Image (tube, rainbow, N blue to C red):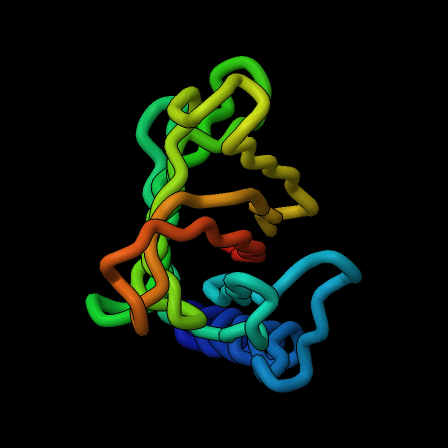
Length: 152
């Protein structure tokens, strides 16, 4: 009998503690410079930022692969933290009428095709320039500037 009473009190304490500590996702506002975990905002060539909650982050060793969107429109970025936080590659698929990619160390000159990454909390800010084409005129090469903010 005594064990049941202790067990009942413990269960009640857990339920009350869980209820007191939880808040709905709608009530949470992240600190400045951060996004809610599992969300992203993507802008290409100054287009309106596209917000999505289709975000996947996979880390293997020092390399994090970030995927947003879906097969028809989205971004895949690879960020390294081996020595310093650096962008290894970005692939843009049909966002803001642009499809293209950035790969570290590949470009017309050493100063061209630079991408940068910074981090605030768990939110990555990735920006740079990609080579590709505009989807309304795919026969001609074009450059696209991108800005990606994503929280893993």
